[in-house]
Length: 236
Image (cartoon, one colour):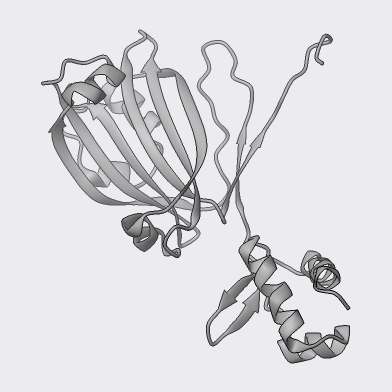
């Protein structure tokens, strides 16, 4: 039996199991499929690279854990609502300081280089596992008295609205694939250069003022985006 055939049999086996479930031993699978251990091991390695299996040294091979889904629906006029992602989310603040905007961020946020920004770096934890690193910058004059504990739970945008009367209206967000560096790998508990998603978001309030610039790294093995698309009658 060829390696490609073994991969397909393993995929069928994976599809029938729950997220995070332990796979049968290599010995059991080699006997079940009638294939040599080296061929089976090579097929498992292929699926591990594709993210369909997870190998844990000393424990065994598992199906990947459940992905956390985030749905993005079409925006409506004057409405900044994004459905909450699955799971129980909380944050751990690891950096919290005031810094000058500088030339590059000043242009991005439409501020003078000398204006102050509140910089927040936090790890987003979902169901007890690190999911993302968010690096957020907000004009400091908008959030006087903001403390780390304020951004560890709940919605940042709700906090801006309720405490500071800053109502976000729209944002431009880009997404691109990337890999984690050494610090990001440590904070997310993933191997160096693990696949990840990079989000950059510029958010404006109801007056058109830039109130946030954020760069976020999300785990590529655990985070999934679902987008709802609406097509007109002339769609190609």
